[in-house]
Figure 1 (cartoon, rainbow, N blue to C red):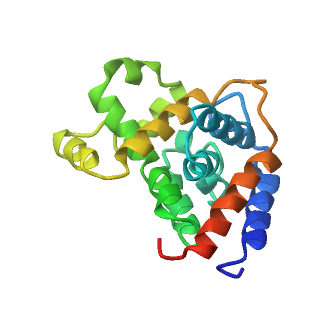
Figure 2: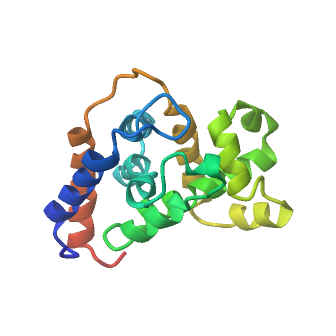
Length: 194
């Protein structure tokens, strides 16, 4: 796929959602696509930038890219979806999209280390994946995360990620949010200095 062809990249993302987006979001009562749309809608409602709305939409694209079964966490496998997704997206998108995605699991680990109430609200599926992902951060990891320039965006993304698990919640369709994807890609194409 051409690096600078927004239409082709949008088509590839659409295809990923068509192929695997209807699968259940591991351990939750919604699909991958519903989860992505709810997260993107929350970011939009919060008045976030187009880049962060795209990050919210695509934060779990690694689940649509990897070859593991969706219940791999119950088999003791960390699918590393945040890394897979960020590595795939970095070819096309600016850091304002890819870094919050790459850090959204780190943001969960950080929040669990620093906010007991947050940790207590995690779903059973999220608790299971937390253990596979390394558990809550230790003090050194916390400090390193806090000094990352993308940590605040990743924490906001994490909030939308946790909230985006509501069965039957109405959001705009995927095509609506793909307009944000197209816009960010076109901006990236016209300003490749990022």
